[in-house]
Image 1: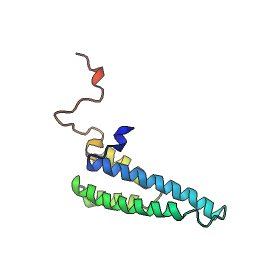
Image 2: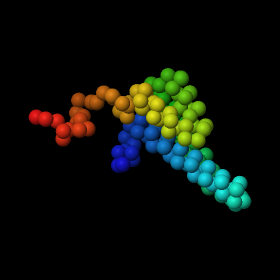
Image 3: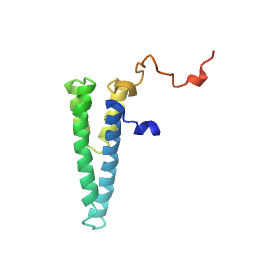
Length: 125
């Protein structure tokens, strides 16, 4: 869990903002229920503002990550489009990780020379 808050690389910062964008989408959807079903007109004021800020942060982070990790225009376009539907950023992050577009977060990523295997306690010597 503490690794999630490690924002030391572009890929880790992108993942953090992608998850935050999805969480704010959920908050906005819940608040929309209270506005439209329960009749509470002020329900979406704060969640809407927070989601808007995190949405803009995701778009900016997509450009920063694309430059840092040398994404092509298709991958950048998919990242930007993923911010439109609810929870699309999570789907994009999962796909990008599996497709090798998120550096050290990707499946089968090449570790540096100083890296310790994740299951280092299971290695027979």
